[in-house]
Length: 123
Length: 106
Image 1 (cartoon, rainbow over the protein chains, first blue to last red):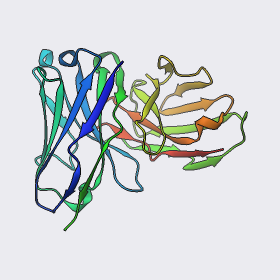
Image 2: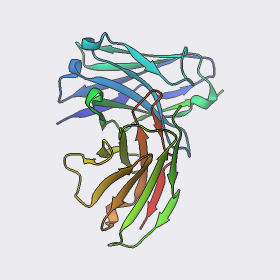
Image 3: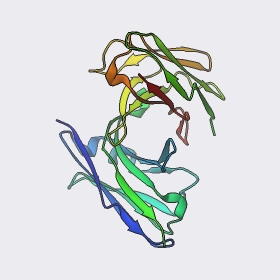
Image 4: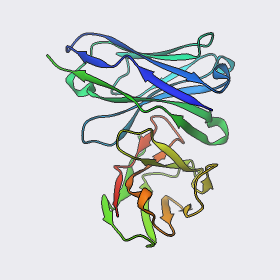
């Protein structure tokens, strides 16, 4: 059974950093790209970023709203994807979701998602 | 960025009704559009990808179609568990973008 579990959320002050983890099981993590999304209170889903597998050089893509502040990495030996969030702003307050990207090259997008972890940025 | 215009924002229907949600994209995306169902506090669930391909395990009452830059999600016979928010998403180009969501009430 595929499982995707986010962790690391919490309350953080503006300007500080936080790292989220996405721990997966039930599939060969190293073979898949992973993506992060978020949902601010009362708002819709927003894409945050994406990390390709080692087969595609572990390259990344980011939304403009987080470019330069957030970074995504992965540890294939532990089946974990990370979202490092620096210089946090109150507008980053949201539930953050991690997902497996099945095969974007053939048009198969995020298929398995976690239930999310809440990040609250407030003084 | 590709803009996504999803409508309606909310809809109320009865069990057994046929329901249609529309998503328009600001440019052609070669059918690279997904529909997700999201219950509050739960993980979003992939329903449809490549505009009309039903994800494995998703009930056949869900279907997707496309015509140019207009995409449609249809629920042929609404069920109580279908009460949720539905989002369209394009993944043709970065940044991936979502529609504003449609809240379906039973």
